[in-house]
Length: 378
Image (cartoon, helix red, strand yellow):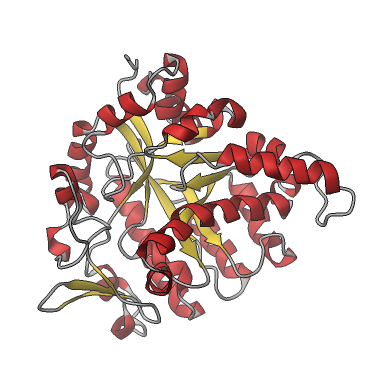
């Protein structure tokens, strides 16, 4: 199979933030509580106030084992062993070339995906401000190849989220805004309306990423449920809930210009869930609240995109979902990703798929959504 593209566009990549990012940049009144890497005899650990500490490993270091064939353990690692492209844009661009990438949408990795779980509102607001400033700097090194995702503070008054959204909208390198996939109070609640108003005016795609929420943090959940079920809940079930909450909450109906991206949850479940939602809507729409004017799948096909790395089942259901709604991602530098064998993985997963449709999913859809220059993508 030949794919006519001079570079894939990965809709899901990550950074691993520098160990001293918050200890050097946070406001002095928070500096002694800053997120940090703590070295112990057996390993390094990520420390974020109020959250379960977790070992350095799967967010970046163990990719070196993955390249060699198999990850044997996520423990016993050092933050400094992380692949340099995780926090330095220049080696990142080299790794993009190695993996045949034209551009990459970049989400937080080591620390940042955990920040929505932080309970202290002022503390969360400050650590997110630091992250957003840094990711803008990182992506500014090559803003047509490094497409940054900024975070919103979700504790405290909604005005804080609005203020940060408006601040980051003008920052170089920012191409999408990330909100948590799961919130304790449905996104249908009127308290969120000022945020939706602002995000619709700003016009950047709004992303929800697996493993993000305002409730129980991922590593606490893994300790409670076990690794397999804990990871499955965060990586698959949570994105399902995010999409269902937004659609059933009538958010896309009330804000038709908003564009949502469900990131790193796979796509094999999308057609099935939309089919169930449409069936329920057909039978019960006259009494359900909030009421939807159209079938749930209509809102998905109009305003949603979903990303995947290795999901043959999802590719085979593409006609039910809409080929133009699906976007491949490499998930660099996480070990469930495809670096540096993305081309080989794409050849396997897309076997038998028409070339034009492959191009849409591995390059065209993301290039269009994130405003990449057409002449540079085909």
